[in-house]
Image (tube, rainbow, N blue to C red; front, side, top):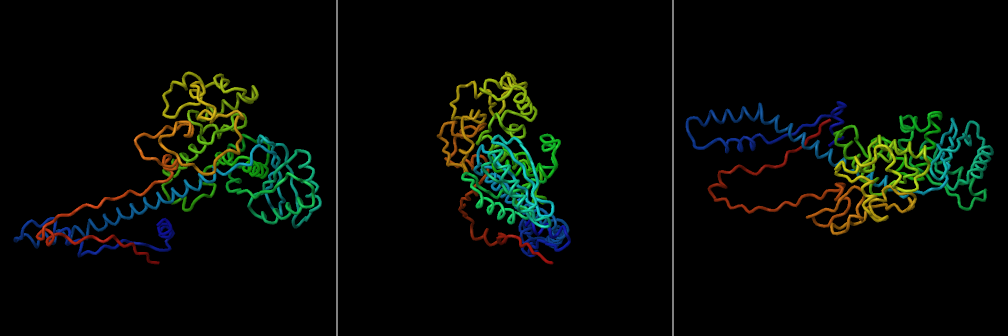
Length: 425
């Protein structure tokens, strides 16, 4: 349906909804005729005029709108499911990664990050035409891997990605790196991130291409922590994103991101403010204050230290938010494996992230839920996807018994067929 509407917008085709006028007139006349008389012809003329001049176009517009809303709902559902699968992808964990942004004429941009995602250095190699400096590229890779103890190489899947992957794998075969592996990473949205305000704030002195290579390396370490910096619509997780209801799409994708972040949890000592802002009870300003406090005072040794952060205190604890604040959970004696682990201080490894939601019963304790969620009362057991609104089941319609008399059935209007959508080019 969205494709048909886009074709109509581009003046490539047009579509209309045709209804049987005779059946429509019979239905209208059956509603207005109480008994025959001299006024019957005039009522028939009024019914015909109302159908041609008013009802036909009005009903067609309503059907077009309903079809558009159904198509929007289905398209947004695809966006939600794809985004959830992408955010819950298993991370490589806290290891040093070398990110490669492939290129032919401009070379392959290299960025190295440590096990916490901190940027270390960058360089450019030219293993392809026109320079074809394969030996120099291998020397550069070998030096960077040895200097920073790199354990993984992340290659973006953009232009010249296959050639770069083949070059790196040949290089690894010739060298003796026992624990080093190479992975192809989806770089959708990396160029948008490199020109965003968040990237300029993180790396004000670096070139856009270097920022893109850093993003590729971090996506291998922790996809969730890096992808939340991007507008979900720029990741390439669905179709016809510009044709659906933008307000509904934005709200739905934000809900998915918040659900994934609060379910998985964040590493308090390494998370950026763009990730912390999705934790329930923490807004953007409070997330920035947490990062500023961490930069000034060093790593958090205990969650109690969060009380010293401006904006997290008694006011946040007693604000009565629908989503519980992390501080209230910390002070409530919640177990380490419970929802308070949403702000973990290296107590759990990031590699423990589940790839898909597990089956969740409504009788399970609240510790089984993600941070900020509550047990569901009075409903049948459902999956976490249903509880989060990520997957809806079609309603079951109950058949109704009809007990009409032969006289009423003789005068009743014939049943309506669903309207036909005709597409003509």
